[in-house]
Image (cartoon, rainbow, N blue to C red; front, side, top):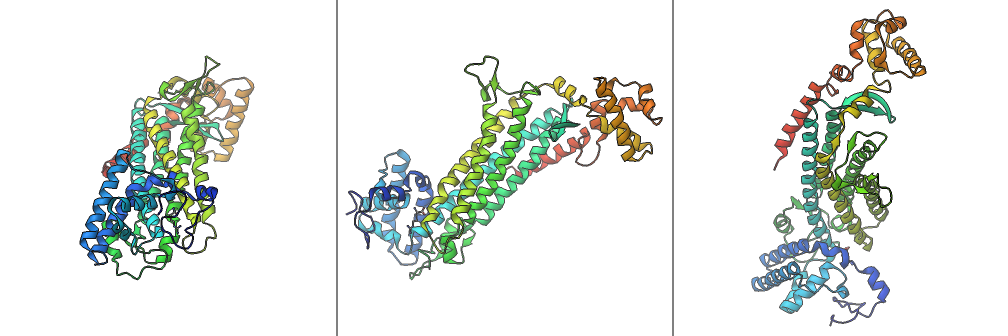
Length: 468
Ligand code: ARG
């Protein structure tokens, strides 16, 4: 019956031809094919349970399992006949099963609906995808820590910025470890999303459960879920598990976009702190001198995609009545897109960061210039008893004078300093070095080398414990 044209596999009241455009619009096969492994896994568990419960015979179950096995091989080898007239991955597999084993194939869908089927498939798929994302996040975390450690001794120093104005010198290792912290929180958000999706919708059927004596605990366990979902309406209607994953990914991609943006800036001629590895940059087709940071730029831009993916599904979910609505079919493309985007970005950064060529002298000069050590002078006066606000004003006057004379702080002599305050002594001049400045930030979480070393040791311990 369902072989030609636009006839529906499941017959029923609307078995007549549908409008071709409507059919194309309705079709999800081009993207939900990606769920085929999970669809087969769900069907295997379901068929096994049906036989255990005496709903189908053992022999029927065995035929179904053999058919599913063959379908798996066909899909893997590329021989599977994907057909658009069967709307989605679920219908394609079911139709093929009946072709292969005859009408008994139709028994697989007993006590099940595509509504609980697709919700189950998607949870299974997302569980795997998030596990792979966690691995990629861990890999990038290891790279960040390794890079931090590599640049700790001798310490590479660059300016730290606020408002993108040179503020105070920091260790490059400290900068890397800041991204390690951010990525670590992104990782725990991924784990949180995995934790809450760990329940099985299978057996909720269309929306109300089923009149067959199924065992939902059995299928839940078979599929590796902690438990079956408690409410059948919720089970088929809810996609907050996708929203959580999408928001974890959007936040994660934002972290990566910030790192990418700094690489774009720091590799510009104006900063000149770093050169990107050739494999991750391109030349200009017209300007021979240019090396464009395409990969960081794309990672930066893809935060827009990830946010868009989240907003797409948030918007599609808003105000949906219970239970299943076809709107929910729109969950897959943004999810697949966000997962692919984030994974590629994580992998690219992990591959690219070790190849960065930092330019210590340029960084150091920038860190020393622009009066980045002014706070250190003010702190000095404060330690000698001057109220900080007053010290701030004194150093402000020093900076203004130097600016007028186009000079930097380290050109000051002791006599000049003492003209501003009698509290200055020879040791004040020692402060005017970037090394002295970072070393003095010797507080928990600060940029002093021994503090950063401790952060790195702690991170290495965390990563060892996380290693699977
Ligand atoms: N392709 C559909 C989806 O992704 C499967 C569920 C269809 N259910 C239905 N009642 N039409 O949501």
